[in-house]
View (cartoon, one colour):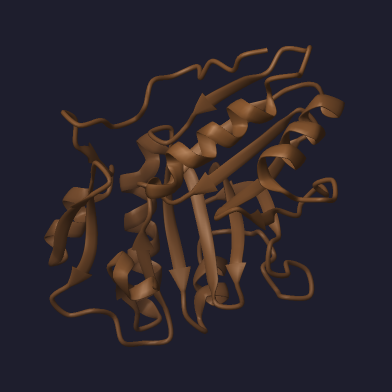
Length: 229
């Protein structure tokens, strides 16, 4: 079958993508650059220097793949190269993307914008011989995202979210749905000192204010995406 994406590309040559957190980032002294069709906060006049910082990553590609369980497993394996089935609560990192199981019939794919065309092509190719119905929803402008970074990332998360992010409970690659600042969201542990938090796009401004207040109490603040490289 051929794969039709349910929504058009979030950005294009004539449309500049903007995060719901951009106004707050600018007010905090962010230096913005246009990257892959998005206005991105890349650095700050005075970056955070404490044990914890946070960065707006709402420009990440976010695709939700939906299919019946057996078909979904095959599509993910073919598109990602992951040679094992996705485990509940555990994302797989492959081909420059995170493949995050949301439910037996749903997988959220997260990647940098520059990898969008490659990821889409891989998914389309993986669906060519699938007889059942497969859909892909582009949630790039449906989910806002912040990365919490530094040795204090887990402590920062605990200030506004009840998800247990202790390494023994939530190792690298763990993916958890739950209440984030009293709203539905997801948390992904990207590495030992980085947690990616996702909530609905309309709540991005709210998430920033909650995280900024908590980070300030810990001696932290916002940083640009270049600080995460």
